[in-house]
Length: 183
Ligand code: IMP
Ligand code: MG
Image (cartoon, rainbow, N blue to C red; front, side, top):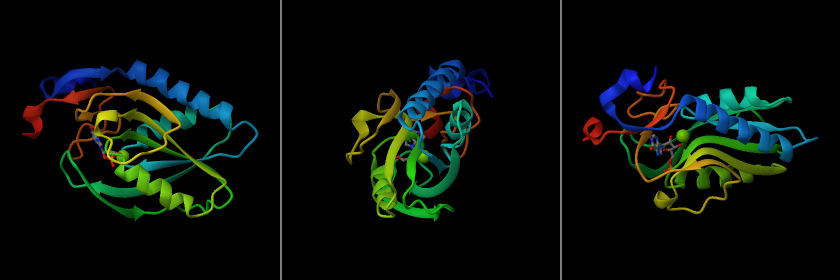
């Protein structure tokens, strides 16, 4: 669905489908340059990263392996709980592998700082992070992010995989959720 289909629920559209498409292509190109001649495993963090993983994998002009993890750091609301649990682990043994974690947004950084440490303990050749969005003002834990699409203000956003209570993930654009939706 498009922003027009959820009209009153968004304060604004931050990024259109076209802008997202171009940005994901740029991120894929940067990763492709950096990993030339090496096998690459991209790890998507369910469920939010489904869209960016699907588009990024297809933007590559080379082979790439895909695996998935599911972690929970949020309740059902708009604030991070800080407690991370693995709900679904990797199917892949990553020892000796070059890994890029793909996420749609870094907010407090709690999830990804925990997750990078967890993956690093499995003796991969390397672990880097790629995120489409980052909220620098919300950061509570330092996270070393190699690939960032956009830095955005500290507001709750939805669309392109990002949800509020499991809705809006299928919105093509990314927009700022109107406070009346969650207050
Ligand atoms: P963090 O641990 O606070 O960095 O956030 C981890 C996860 O919270 C992200 O991967 C998202 O799934 C979710 N999240 C954080 N900010 C937003 C937002 O603005 N909209 C929707 N989901 C968000
Ligand atoms: Mg996520």
